[in-house]
Amino acid sequence: MNTYKIDKKEIEGMNITETGYKVLHYDLKGNYGDFRYGDVDENICGNIYKVDGDINLCNWGLHSSKDPANVFNFYEPLGYNRYFKVNSYGDILHNDEKTVASVIEFVDEYNLMEFLEIIKEYPRSNGVNKSNGVSWSNGVSWSNGVNKSNGINWSDGVNKSNGVNKSNGVNKSYGINWSDGINWSDGVSESNGVSESNGVNKSNGINWSYGVNKSNGVNKSYGINWSNGVNKSNGINWSNGVNKSYGINWSYGVNKSNGVSRSNGVSWSDGVSESYGVSGCKSIKQCIFCYDIECVKHHIFNKQVSQNRFEEVYNAIMNYQFVPYYTNIYDLKGNLEWYRVNLPLLFEYDKKQAWSKMPREMIDYIIGLQEFDKDIFYDITGIKV
Image (cartoon, rainbow, N blue to C red; front, top):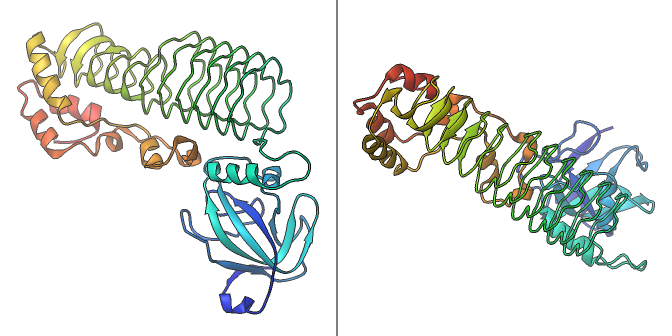
């Protein structure tokens, strides 16, 4: 039995049997089988598909749900899934949760938040209208002020939490206790043990992070993924693109490093502050393109310089506004909201990829420095000059 795309003329004269809603994974596959309705990112609205053979609920056919809320019985409410309005043609079979047809047409596509609005506005007679996707949630007690929050699913043990407002897509999260003021935070998924944390505001795309406890003031931080054991940490603010790193403040493009403050382009280093382009270093401050050194200050390419020389070179480099990112998080994000970022496609860059977009004029400036060392430059960036 096969599924295939057909031309619109093949449904001429057929009536729409039912209008419903359908979800597909980001790669336009369903839950079963290898059939894809198109390529990743392809617009399939207007396309019509047909199956051969006899349709059967759960076993064979083109499935959808008349009530859009029912799609979440089969697909998680993830920002990177694809959400569609569809028309079914010809004979259908259905139960309370789903419909199966031999022919469906994709009519419109929605992002997750648009789809949640459709769910809220869908007319129901059981008093569920305008209730926002709060399902499979156990032990929700002593929680006040949970307002305008959509898609809070499969979440257990949310206790004594106040002021959880305008937060979307909080899924598969356990043990969120005694936490106040979690506002305007989207896409917090598959995170366990977030307890006694206050003031986690305007932070999006914090996924697959465990053991974030007793942490306050984590504000305006994006793309912090796969970081575990961040406990009793305060003031992790304005940090972007931080991957597998701990205790980061006011820093960008940091990879597998701990205790980094006001620094850019730091990898495999600990205790680095006010520096640029360092690797394999420990306890250094105000250093530029330093490699495998520790306990130093005012160095350029591992050479001692004056504070005035450091500031001259540092300010010149900052004017190029280049930061090496060690993941593709910003390529995935583009102009999307963070809760829509397709995190399964997130991967790490090696050092050469991370530094590959350095402007040519910046490279020429660095090569022209009297302190320049081509071997150190290669060890840090992977770029041969």
